[in-house]
Image 1: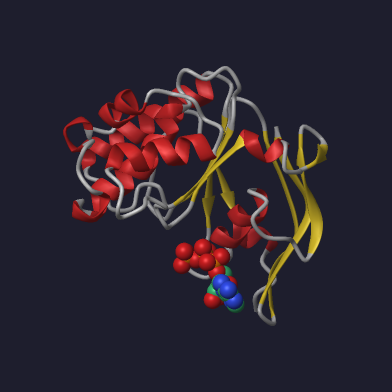
Image 2: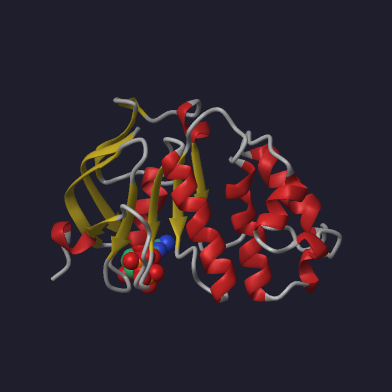
Length: 206
Ligand SMILES: Nc1ncnc2c1ncn2[C@@H]1O[C@H](COP(=O)(O)OP(=O)(O)OP(=O)(O)O)[C@@H](O)[C@H]1O
């Protein structure tokens, strides 16, 4: 599905990693590990097509990633990207449309335990509720036909135990449907069939 060949990443004057090889196949779950500042966010952004690598390339089904194939990727970064002035339902609907996801917003919010907050302005939500709202985008994929690749940056941050369990269930179900998932996390995770990728293997930092 999504793969990387000989990737190198430079931030400012520092080379973070080089020679990175990666293959995210349908049905796979990978957990990206590495120390603070090691380049996990930088790698996810490169894989999502949001920034360019210093060397190497990102491939979608063995062809260079382009605007069309980027539609197959759902990237959820540190920022939740929910507009403060919209209601949660409107903000999710906007994000879903922008990402070419159809899906049922009401059902997606219910999956993350946010059904009762659908009309609430985003600005009135707690940190954990905003994170859950952003992650409800993943539930929009549930009825979709195309198996996408999810790139998630610290998705468990700020989640309570019930929401973390709901997220794990979404990730495992997505992989079972033939989707691929790469998530960066510092937390110990128990996701069925997940493999670890240690970014330090390609580190160029002294
Ligand atoms: N816009 C930028 N300009 C220059 N350097 C940057 C920029 N953004 C990030 N960096 C640097 O790149 C390095 C890697 O940052 P990145 O956010 O990818 O790490 P990370 O592994 O995700 O870290 P964390 O575990 O703390 O989230 C850090 O040293 C950071 O200071």
